Length: 373
Image 1 (cartoon, rainbow, N blue to C red):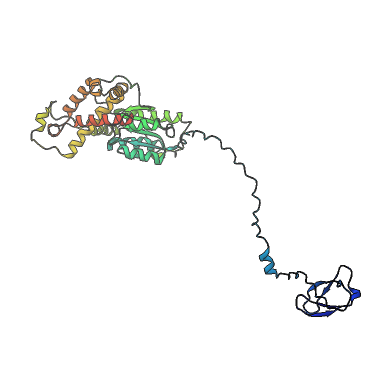
Image 2: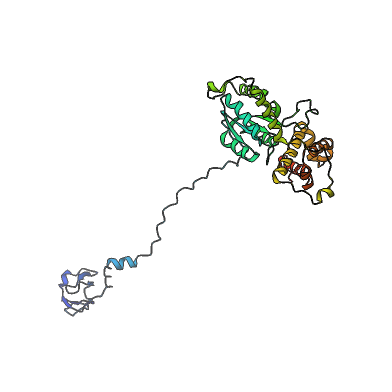
């Protein structure tokens, strides 16, 4: 029988005996098409058209195959298990820790006084005991030196310029880091007949000394405070030439030194006490030079600082209540009379420096007590 390829049309002669019942699948030798060949219903050599079968789909190329694939969902790696955040503890209130205490140098002593004769006397006494002496003449410089040098003992004039000595004492003793410093206040008692008692409070100072007792009492007071710090100081041994007993010929020199210390306060009055009114002070007169004015201001500070040293409670109550001048009227009146009796007429006529220093004193005390100006 003759069959035709439905793909390319080639005619093929096939033996009927090889065609099975129901048809046999043949492959076209020309185009490779596979088709089904069936026996004709009637016997004969009549030509049977080649039965076409659906062409076999050609194998797609790799590129086409990839294109025909359904789009794949992009692979997303599984997320790591959620990390549990540690529960934060409630913030604790900050504990304010006190500043560490200063490491004090037990070989150093600071002395602050604006009288050169006093500084020289104190230095000679302490050097003879083997100490290193640091000298300052005003309050701010004294504070800076104390913070830098860390002396174990400070000897402070209560009437220091710029910052009173008792103010420095109050600061040091009320600061945890510096509270171990030993302090001696030097008082310039302006009326030695009035004060027959020791001050009840010293603004935290460990001791005080009146200026005219420096020569005979300072070394003993320093030794006592040194012993309280834990024994002998770490100082150099006194040199042999430094140690000598006062000779009889030194006595006039000591007396002269005492007179110079008195002059550091204020020269003795050349005229009797006078009281000058504000109107009189405003009148033109002899001009006072700057040194006289500064000496008058210093003397006013000495008077006020002594009032503060011996009346601390009353001073602070008066500052707090705003009636300082009324509460201490008797002390200020006595101080004013002494001031007028020791200050020259030219200085008194040029300005009321006692009142000026009183106002400054009140302002500084208000600041020290945290009350503002």
